[in-house]
Length: 311
Image (cartoon, rainbow, N blue to C red; front, side):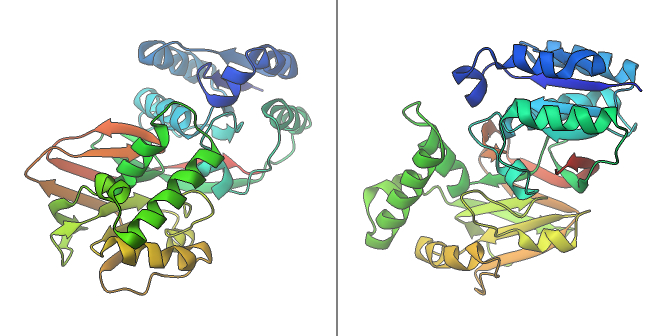
């Protein structure tokens, strides 16, 4: 069997707290594959080329959502039209929204890898969930895109250095409270998007948005699943255009928690193949928790399908 390839990010949340983890993963992996710790984009591409030559069956990612999108971006660059190997997430990041979206068990990375190696050795069929990647500007591959208020939330989350679920909940609570009273915190986060937004060539009605999001997974984090329609359309992206006031967005949070539509005419929801956002000024955005700078035209499209090991 060609084996298992593990890409480990030493800067991810759990790896920073447990610097010995990579040695433990190497021990668990044994002779069933290879583990690599690339220290930059060029080195990551080299690792992808090596794993491609060896024809690995499973790509394990030891990091969180940010690591996942960086690894998959590099592997798509190398693999081209060749199908990607199965992808197994080891939940070693501060943000693990993708892992939660496929109901991956909350286990330590070495336990997840050990279970995977045992099944692989026994030639068992692995349970998988198939999702398309979201490709941004033909440069970045991920699962969850958002600009405007969504990107501002991530900036507030990273502000101060300390991050985690508790920090995310505190930022959300502060933002909701501030939105209800019109406080300064939410006002600093509001960066309205003035843009022409088209979905599969059809323009959305509005020209000003709190945020425009697109995803190939249902979760947005913290238990909210506004992109739940994607469960019925795994080969597409779901686009949400938030043209509502911020209080309207806050009022929709409970419905998204229970996987219900917002039921507001100023929140557009469309399942499509391509989203195009055109504005007069360059736009920043977040992709799987990473903050990135874009141009005046941003294109998000449904990309290649990946098989995510889910148990």
